[in-house]
Length: 191
Image (tube, rainbow, N blue to C red; front, side, top):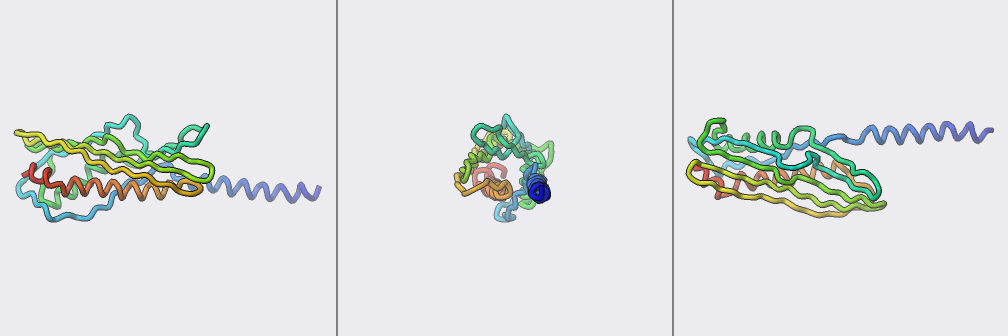
């Protein structure tokens, strides 16, 4: 009888720890790419319309796959196309490009891929990350199309950490957006 009295508080304590661990798990990723301001390219008296479209069939960013279980999915807290549009608009405007709805230059960005695929094993995990953005610019005379990709693979011990994936995704996305902003062909095409 004494062992039952001791086991009940211990079992309750373990149950509380398990529940508190589940309560702290994130439900969404915070996507906020931090980019360095590029002042090299200046777009004096230039205007453009910027459209960003998400072409993915599913809107999650992280998918954690475990054998015999349903995938665990995490989406961005805000729409990915809105985040990309806001970030690029801000930096192009700092370079002197006016973003407006009725400009001659039209910049269309299609999000073709943005996924972190995690294969979770018992004591390890493998990660494949891929972001693909297709940029199409029309200046009413010509059209320029460029595809920007960022891919990576990694492995880790124990359990996958969504916070680490969030940080890495933000770094990869920032790198890709900076490539678009610094691209010589795009900048020359907008002049």
